[in-house]
Length: 315
Image (cartoon, rainbow, N blue to C red; front, side, top):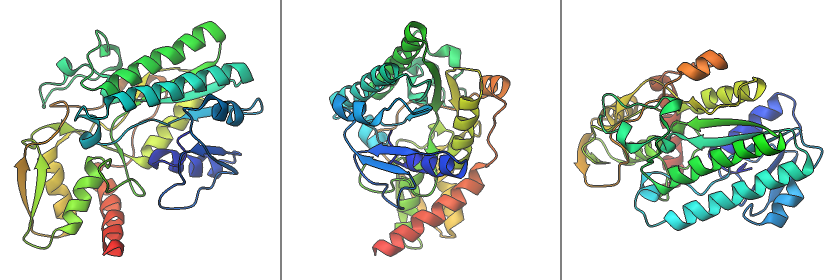
């Protein structure tokens, strides 16, 4: 579910490489390459009849990645809160209900680091994102609140109906074939696009003072983490992210360096989310044995080259 999106379309490819038969469902086709799903369904997962049709009794596993989402420009303005909460919650309610009714044994749910309390992420140098700090809850966005609700809902279905649940909180997943323009792109793709579009000696704009910190996880590492969690006996929730924290200004400088250009950074007012966020991987390392293999420079080089090619092809 969500197989037409960035992570979902990559996950389909991974599952096919592992020998699975895969059904993919989304509102749209993958944007940058044809789906490799054996059965491809265009459908709105907010519609319970669609979910009832695609969740069938012969499925071994469901991977639920579908959500109403986007980058900071979409999530943190407040203008899309009702859609974010209603659409995503409806998808998850439909999915859990259909999975139990059809007897599917195991489901993966992609939650988000956005569930963590804002009060633990005010210091950009020392954010606190261990899994047990989610409560008392105070996410900084309605997107985070819906993710937290859906985590609890899936675990309630596990307790009451016995379906096996695996929950991972993603921390800023990036890589080739991700949305890079249009308003819903996330920071890695957005900054890559700005750098690729800007001529030598030019200027790129960064929202906020640029001192806010994040960590970013390359897509292949994310998929490794998802599969390791699904094959483990641990339900989660666990962080799936990188522990390589960086300020957004330094992140932009890294991408400029990869491009080989001489560009300047201007910080402007704009939505930026919490001051600091970094994955804490102690729990997943202990329970699942997973940790990332790609460092940020390596992953961003691959991502910048892909985005730059898209910019060049567009022009």
